[in-house]
Amino acid sequence: MYKQLMFFLTAVLAALMIAECSTGKDAPVKPAQPVISECELKAVSGDIGRYGGALVLMALSDPKTFNPVTASETSSTEIINHIFSGLVEMNGETMDYEPALARSWSTTSDGRTWTFTLRKGLQWSDGLPLTADDVIFTFDVIFDSRIPNSTADVLSVKGHPIKTRKVDEQTIQIVTVEPFAPLLNGLTTPILPKHKLEHSVRAGKFNSTWGIDTEPEKIVGCGPFVLNRYIPGQKVVLSRNPYYWKMDTEGKRLPYLDGLIYVVVPDLESMPARFMAGEADLLSVRGSDYAMLKRQEKAGDFTMYNLGPALGTEMLFFNMNPRAVKLDPARRRWFSDRNFRRALACAVDKKGIISTVYDGLAVPQNGPESSANRVYYNPSLPEYPYDPARARILLEQAGYKDRNGDGYIEDSSGRTVAFTIITNVENKERVDQGNIIKDDLQRLGIKVTLAPISFNSLVTKLDKSSDWEACLLGFTGGLEPHSGSNLWKSSGQLHIWNPAQSTPATAWEERIDRIFDTAAVTLDKEKRKALYYEYQEIIADELPVVFLTTPTRTAAIRNRFGNLRPAISGALWNEWQIYVR
Image 1 (cartoon, rainbow, N blue to C red):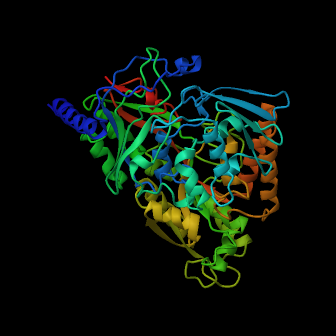
Image 2: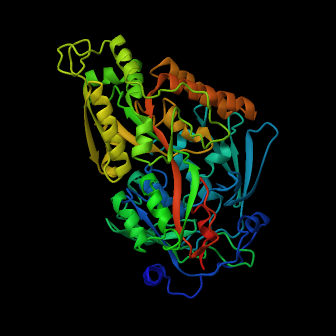
Image 3: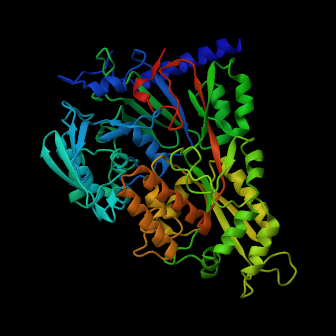
């Protein structure tokens, strides 16, 4: 009976979603004279699917923007990534870089000049041609000093931006001051439509262009889906892009799905129940929910995919920004004290967090790269196991003591050590971690206030106002360490504890800057590995952030979909190929 009810609910939901995503035509529009290259055929190999249906997901919060350059938070980028493509893409299973908008490329013997050839017949979602002019325009925007973004950091070689040149309508040359090993990784960045955005750039209004109040039809992309509808606080609806550049081996224009629907569910606690009720097709499974969902796997007609440790990590970090005018100078002094940070690292019970919050489905994190990164992860970093006694010794050595016997420590000037940790209220796992950390630190004699706030408010504090003291948050990771240069280099916009430094504030930050600059122009893989091992050692020793855990990535997906190939890079990395059986 349960299974019959689930089938009925799923069928009704699918019918509603198809109607919502429908373009009003039986099959997708076929652009004139589409061209399939050999690499496209290889990219779409798999079962031949059929058109129709929608895949429903859940989002913790609303997007902040639909602008792919200014977006920095996952609530926005997760949506945007469906709407745009880059010159290059990463295969989610092999982790190899493969042709995307560019069908091929070559490089000169000195490794400094790259030539990319676009596919013939590329079109934007409004039907207009996508050409080399759009590519040149995109990189001009990224390196426009009026437009703050993290991609400029990732695509700079020793502080010098890459240079782009149009050869003809289908060909672009990219020149770097030195050979640039992570160039292909950087070229996964979304390409922008010049004909839709050039005016806003010239008018100096690009930073506010394509906000969440933009009419969907004005947002033009080149990815598998287009924005169809956005209802704040409720859902984001994406529809099939009829001009997407991939086809299957029978020449059918992809994607197969009519669309994707993100339902906004600002409460992790309710997501499993809504998934079990048939209101969504995919659920990112928390450790605390794993056993319950595993028992329901057969009856609920879904499959659990355990993908191993995630590429990202959870961190506790502190505001050390001397330009943060609202930050209490005393707190800045505490946070800038390495022994203070090390003491806090020893005071946090990571194993307790893993057991209590994740039900064992996580691993301790000791540095900036996840153990999932089999190429660059350094397994020999300094560790900070739970050791309150060591934490107290480190604090006393640094001058923090309980001077009046009230149970709370004071600094050398007699100021009681107290601060507030913010985190995003929508993520109960993170709030639960915060409460454990709060209790651990208060047993050490530190007054801690945990203040969960909305994710978008938190991002505003970090990005704009600098009005915060400590923060508990997760950062997404990747296989190419250079993609994290905007976080770890002192000049990076996301160098969260003291961002966008004109010159490095410390000698160790200066060394990390040099490591990233050197690794970027080092083509020998073993030498790059040695450099990235060193950066991890420096971060683990200086500890600008307290590393916590890396959760195991687990997904539950309904069995009604074909061509599912979940990988650590994402459960839907091949979304253009997925179909309803």
